[in-house]
Image (cartoon, rainbow, N blue to C red; front, top):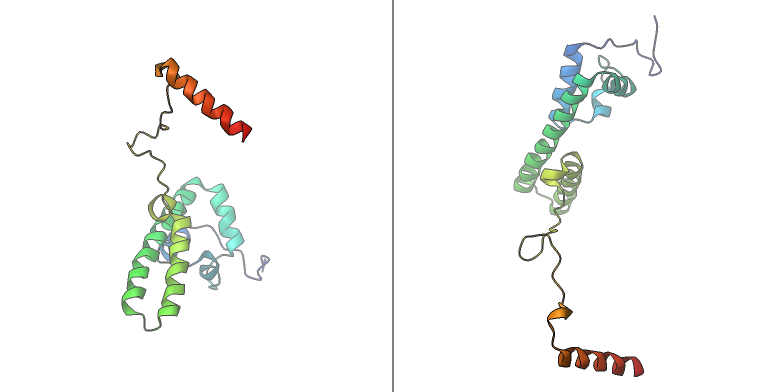
Length: 149
C-alpha cells in the first residue's frame, strides 16, 4: 500500500471530504485537529488542495469567516457560564484574537481615521495671505525673539 509522509494511505480529494473539512472549520475546529482523524487527509494535503482547487479555496475561506462568528458566539457563552474568571478571561482573549485575525473587518481593532468633521481631511492651518501686515510683523518678531532666547 502506498503511504504518504504521515504514514497514512493517500486520501483522495472528494467533495465529501472537502465539505466535511469546511464544516468542521466553521464549527471551530482547527485544521490540525481535523486532520488528526484517521479518515482525514494530512494537513499538508489539504493545503495542496487549497492551492490547486479555487472552488475549495473559496469554500474554505468562507468556513474560516464562519469560524470567527463561532468564536464570537462562544465568547458570550464562556462569559455567561464561567466559574473561574481568570480562566474565562484567557479563553475569551484567545478567541477574540483568533476572530480578529480570521475576520478583521468585523472583529478587528477599529481605527478612527476621520477628522472631527468626518471628512478625513487634515485640519486647515493659518492662511497667511489673509493676515494683516501688522499681524505678520508681530508673528515674525515673536519668532525672532524665541530664536534669541
